[in-house]
Amino acid sequence: MEAKIKNAASPLPADLEQVLKDWQAGKEVRSLELGHSQQEERHPDGSHSLVPLAVRNDQARAYAYFFHLIELFKLNGVPRTFELFQTACDAYEELFREETDELTKGEVDGAESLAWKALTQGWARAIDGFKETQYIQVRKP
Image 1: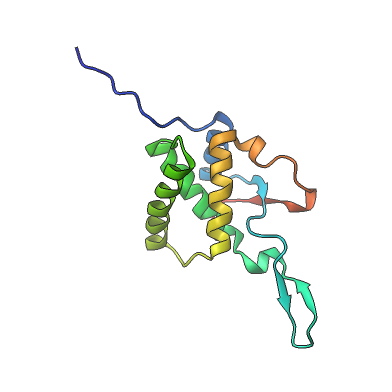
Image 2: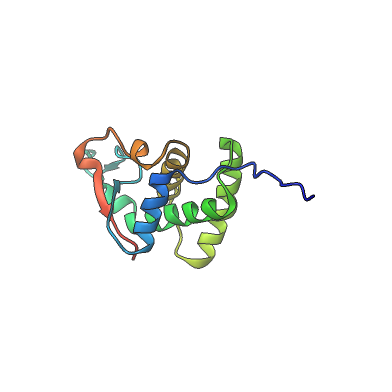
């Protein structure tokens, strides 16, 4: 009799699985703008202003990376600890960089932060509770 080895990692939450399917099908997905919302730009006259998030972080590229992570965690399992998640993200980021443009730190941090929350709490809970102005529609390019 063959012993079954139980995978130490867990599957994707059901609602995240559906969001991944929608993304892969080219459907719009309601999500959040990724990146720090309070980055300031200093002007030559000494004044400051907030830099629009869309200028600082390429949302299409950030979400391409986010869904790259989700696809790989679906294939390889969701790590049980944040430390294992970070280790996996380091490897998955390198794979992504081989296939696409350079990612900014804000794009990486935003995508990985949302990925961990969505993988551990589900999609709905990961994006719940933000100001309406922080939500965007994203679609696979």
